Amino acid sequence: MDRSQTKPGEGFYEEVRKAVLERVCGYCVDRQPSGPPCTLQGHLCCVFGHFQPVVDAVLEGSALGGDGMQPYLLRLREKVCVSCEHCGSAGRCPLREHMLCPLSFYFPLFVESVESVRYREWQKGA
Image 1 (cartoon, one colour):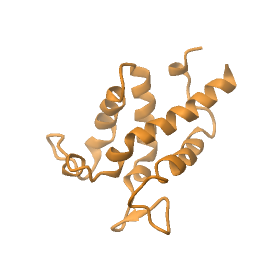
Image 2 (tube, helix red, strand yellow):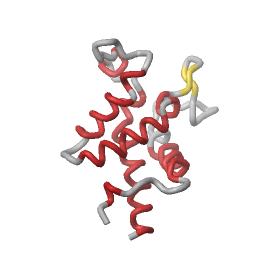
Image 3 (cartoon, helix red, strand yellow):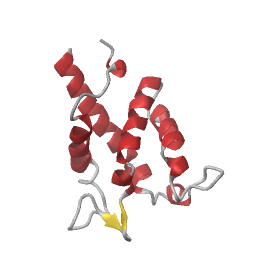
């Protein structure tokens, strides 16, 4: 069975959430004592504020195939960034451009979290 074709099982998003808390939040320089998930300037961190659409973008990016992060980034921009309040109509994001968007900055760790959970699920079903 091809891992890219497997659908997430029950509890998948919760397992990804746990992996993200460990992998992403563990490295976050903005992590607060009350978090994670943290609120920055009164807003939920975008890693969790857009959690399910970001996970879905990773799953779709994985299905696209290709090299490196490009397929994942393509889906992230198409599915999540376009609806972000910081992204302009031309697709430019000042936060992303200045490495101030936590989601953009930690996205490789987010992808790793999703893919590791998906791999564990695939192993169980293989």
